[in-house]
Amino acid sequence: MRTSFLVASVLATTFVAGAPLDTRGNSPSFNFAKGGNAQSGNSGNADGGSVYNAGGFIWNQPFANKAGKGGLTQSGTAQGGSGAAGGGSAVSGKTGNADGGDVGNFGAVIVNGYKSNQAGNGGTAQSGNAYGGNAWKRGNTPSFNLAKGGNAQSGNSGNADGGNVVNAGGFIWNQPFANKAGKGGLTQSGTAQGGSGAGGGGSAVSGKTGNADGGSIGNFGGVVVNGYKSNQAGNGGTAQSGNAYGGNAW
Image 1 (tube, helix red, strand yellow):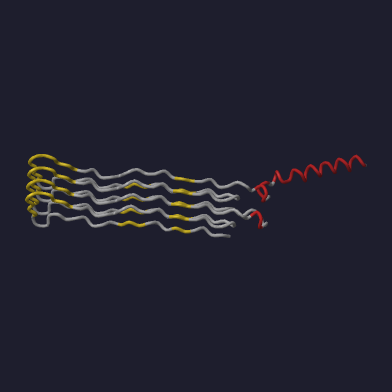
Image 2 (cartoon, rainbow, N blue to C red):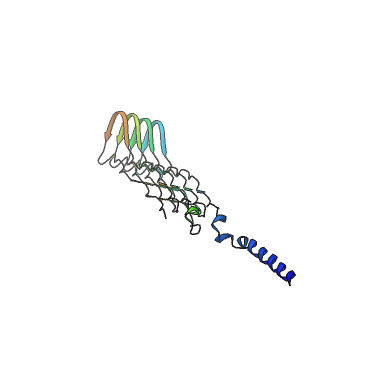
């Protein structure tokens, strides 16, 4: 009878000691893992191609010299992981430029025909959004709930300027509608959202934007003759920084 009691006691002791290992996720003292950090890569340039002519005598006939438009350069979204010991930080990459191409003529005599020399419009440069991870609640004991939400920072966006038109020579004759500069495009930084946590919300910083300037036109010569509606500069585009939202404290 005494032997059975001792065996029962040993079994009971073994069961109680092993219980936290089987229920590790429910014990605050074991919830020490932090969410992983995330960072998306930078994106390169997506500029339109340029056109350049250099010579003694340059005669650009109608519709000659059209530069390329800027394309799309965009970095990816970054999402920090969540965890009981704190949310992971998130940083999205910065973008390159998406400028429109330029047109340049450099000669002693330059004649630009109808609608020649059209520079490219700016494209789109947009950085990805960044979301900090959340800190999970670790049981009902206040001393265990000190973890903070992850920080978030969106990347800077590049330029999306319209292309320029430049003529430099001794004698320049711009015929009607010659020389049209490119419009500015869109440059926009992503949204930043800090993670939430009982120990405090994560900070959020949105990236700065580049420029979205309209293109310029320059004629530099001893004699310059400008025809009807020649030399139209580009309109400005849109430069917009993303929103930033700090995380909540539970």
